[in-house]
Amino acid sequence: MTDTEKFRLRHFVEKLVQQGECVVHDDPIDLIDVAAVLDCNPRAVWFRAVGPEKTELVGNVMGTRRRLAAALDTDEPGFPAALRERLRHPVAPIEVPSPQAPVHEVVLTGEDADLTALPVHLQHGLDGAPYISASIDYTYDAKSGFTNIGCRRLMLRGPRAAGIDLNAPSDLRALYQAAVARGERTPVAFAVGSHPTDFLAAVAATAPMDELDVVGALRGAPVPVVKCITVDVRVPADAELVLEGYIDERGLVEAEGPYGEYIGYYGLLKSNPVFHLTAVTKRRDALFQTVTIGGARLTFTDTAQLGAAKTEAAIWNVLQHAVREPVAVCCTASSGGMYNVRVSLRQRNPGEARNAIAAVFCSSGDVKHVFVVDDDIDVFSDEQIDWALATRFQADRDFVMASSFRCVPLDPSLQGSRTGAKGGFDCTKPFGKGDSAEFTVPRPPQMPRRPRQTRTHGGARHPGRPRDPARLRQALPAGSAQAPQGRPLCAQRRRVRVNGRKTGDGGRIIRHRSSVVRPDSRSSPSGPRPVC
Image 1 (cartoon, one colour):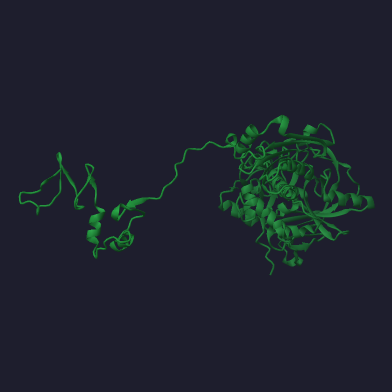
Image 2 (cartoon, rainbow, N blue to C red; image 1 turned 120 degrees about the vertical axis):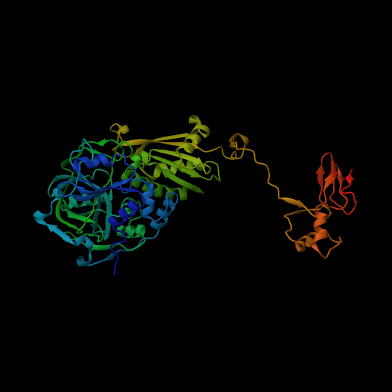
């Protein structure tokens, strides 16, 4: 039977609680106070009693790379490679009947389907309305036969209407524009409450394919899907909640926004289409989800971390064709997960750093600044990047600037321009001088380590120390006298120098006042005799 629990959001959140990555907020809390608890919070928060309905709500689940890595069963250093590897292996979904789909345990249609009954909170002080921010959209492309997936926010306009942002270029925007040209509605479903792997799949840049296969790739298992109740769209059967409906055919006609965007500033009021709700389906104990967007510390937001993961994977694929040996790619979450990219490489030929810069420029409209360093620099370390920029970069020689690129309209530095500029920083050592003294890092002196040596029979030195007579006899030089017992051999080992002269018989030496004596009462009836 198909497993519909393994990739349930609730189970992942329970795992985060056990790891100390999620705080449980048991006390009742008003919707208006939720945002303040989540803002700049390095941990996820699980609210057990939100709003008048005392609904469960979780936020900031993907607000650190560590938690995204946990979703792929790896750690932070292993996350980029694990993400790329999984994306290489699409897995087709498995369809399950409605009675076996947990997301169909509760079905609300008509007047019972009500967006305002959900725990949707005001995320930022100047937002135009409360937003559903953790929604993954699913649409069916009849031309290709593929399901398309993306991440979209919904601005509440009433019990069964919401604004949807389709200003930025996207597959859903293209599908919607084609439907508008035909005078048709666009059926769509939004999953709210999804495992982080589903979000990673929704933002991934992949070749054209059924994107339910991409979800399967990130999960490493087929996604159980179920056909929606009121629209011809398939959605994950293990989601917490699904909103079914359509986007009307009137086009970009209704005001939407303003909204605190993922770049850290407000997006202005825009014209967008309207989503109309036809059904709400959910689990009986559905866990509603919100994602963190914008704020004073983008590093701790879901959207910046997801954006960084997407950008790194896409750029790595491009670099593999542009340079011989890329080492690592980092897109900083603090830049919104897209604007600033760091690349380390192992240069085999002159000019490869510039090739890397040019490749990144052309690969993404989101990236503005590219920093290329040698493989001895950790691109995930702000300190090391700062050092490389300070000591390996000359602005008149190593800066690359180009203009009139496609860009993200939300960038306030554009000041209304529809195209933008990009800057590249070649922070690599001059080719061929990597081992020169001027680029050698000073380190503490280290003396060469020598093997431990001990003196054996005949004054010869051998590494190690024989522990028994048999091993000692084996260590003697060829032709030396072989004693049958270990005592004479041990006596020879005890030969020492006294005042520059060797003792006569290897016996134990005792210093007594100003003279050195050998204990040998058999040599003299009067006691020990002096030894000169």
